[in-house]
Image (cartoon, rainbow, N blue to C red; front, side, top):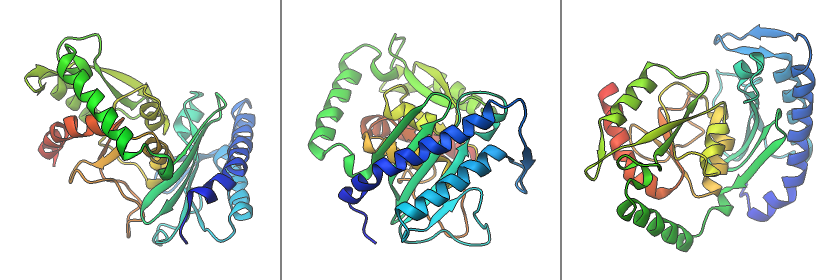
Amino acid sequence: MNISHNFLKTILNPLQETVSEASEAIMNIYNKESFETEIKSDGSPVTEADNKANEIIIRALHNITPDIPAVTEETFNHDEDLPQGAYWLVDPLDGTKEFINKSKEFTVNIALIENSIPIFGIVSAPATGEIWSGSFFERPSKFFRSVNYFNQFWKYKHVPGGLGGGNTPDPIRIVMSKSHQNEIDKEFLHFLEGSFIDGFPISYKVVEKGSSLKLCAMADNEADIYPRFGPTSEWDIAAGHAYLISKGGRVCQMSSGKHLVYSKVNNILNPAFVGFRNTYLKDTYLPLIRDFYKKLV
């Protein structure tokens, strides 16, 4: 099945209604004094909100696109491989720990994967009512990307400290998890403190976000770079990844520098990756970040 831009336009409204319904169900449980929580075989928590949202989304996707299979975190059989054609990839409640801890930074994630690429994604933040959506077909044109690239280049080369170079009021914005920062993340920030770009010391600040909101923050120009060294599953980031692509951003594997892909055989986990707000940041910072990563492995 070849997914087209027009096809995605026809199903956008039903999908927005679906994530809104799932979000409402999640918040009804969130606002209860207590709710059921279990521990899955992989040690991660699952709540009745995960299960309720999953039911709503699976039913809706079957009605909206009966010919496209859906894979969700709550129903995936780890003994099976992901589909190789077009399929929905769903995390009905991304950030379950944030949900349990009564943080507001959890999301509903629905992505459409085709040919190992997230070609469409919709993300909802139930606690705030925000919804983000975008597709591969909406990404900036080659001409626009070239113009934006030149503007970023000019800012970097001619504005003192631009894009994180030197002591500057315009530091590079590194987005990291609110609940999953570890020693490697701290080592990476320390590494940046002693690193240079074209002879300028790097200046940065950390932006903390939960769940797939980190990818949405980059797409919305609230952050510049998202390094992820710890484990994630494909359904954790696919929807946010698609939205980032629609705004001109990129997500790359740290090991190879190539674009992050989906539908891997015998493995639902993502390798270490790094996201960038735009291609200029990717070209500027990816070699440096890969140098750090190579020292870890």
